[in-house]
Amino acid sequence: MAEVEELVDRVVGDTVVGLELLNMWLGRRLGLYRALEEGPLDANGLADETGVHPRYAREWLEQQGVAGWLKVAGEDPGGDPYLRAFALPEEAREVLLDEDSPFYLGALPELFASIAWALPEVADAYRNGGGVPFSAYGAGTRHGIGGLNRPMYLTSVGRWVGALPGVAERLSRPGGRVLDLGCGTGWSTIALAEAFPEAFVQGVDLDQASVEEAKGNAAERGLSGRVAFACADAAAFEAEEDRYDLVCVFEALHDMADPVGVLRQVRALLKPGGSVLVGDERVAESYSAPGDLLERLNYGFSTLHCLPATRAEEAKVEAGTVLRPSIVHEYALSAGFPQGSTVADIEHDLWRFYHLCTDPGPGASAERELRRPASGGTGHRAESAKPGPQASGPWVERT
Image 1 (cartoon, rainbow, N blue to C red):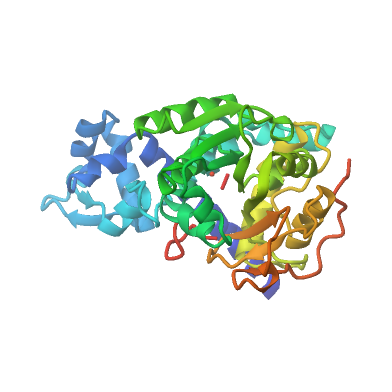
Image 2 (cartoon, one colour; image 1 turned 120 degrees about the vertical axis):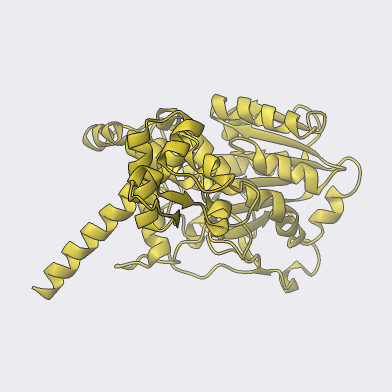
């Protein structure tokens, strides 16, 4: 009976968390948090600032106060609940609204809601064995993944590349070229261009809407001349000019329908001595149940988004979100990288980074930055029938 009661408590607690995430989505969608940035407001003031009905404003403010995201800033002496003022604490403002902060998670409710929106299509895919295209999840998933990873890319990409022997030096000289596969709304491509101003960076993504937004984001930051974006299948992308010093695949390899084919194509696009940097989920090295919070997070995304989105692309490989180090190593070997993959010594709470190269160069085996992945894995074969801050933030080591 104790175990049953524990499970009942868990379901109730999980329901509370889900409902609070949806209320956070509502607050961002309607500009309620933004209105509170300027100072405390009561229900009438919030209604005036945002155009929502005062009764809804009152209920949402009270819910946010109960949930701990807002603080009661002043009671009306007459006891009128419409005149009870609420304030947005600085720490909540940073987490929910500061898109440059390494602690920013305001895009997460949007990602959560977009996945819930697509659940009927996911259920149909489970029944008929099909998939759910990335586009079916809507702008919420696109913006959720991009928004979560944006501050991490803009502050950390240079450090990640710097952990690979000799790569940053190559990109610091005129003529350096980078290919960013699975670039989404372009923040990883933009971050690479800003970290290495001598280099040209090409972003590639299969989602047309993401590519169009990426172009706009790059233009806003004055990078249109040094970056380019293409909507293309990574497994078939061809370089129009010279080959690349570095190819990056951030949080995208597990979503690719043909990861071995992509890595094989990447190998052909590298300059002699070029490198590949893969950043993917920091999952356990082998399966065990029950899992920790991170394993539960990744399997949650996998069942509802990443696996259905991959199956919609007539996938040769269906990794799901849980891409273990041994599988990445096997992919790399199958794609023709003689050393397979090595795990880069890059600090991150949510991601693990892999280095692939055609020519490791003299003394590479002794590099401090790299180590072999541990053995073990799921037993999947490489060929068989899918928005991060600094190490000090919560979204360290998407959609």
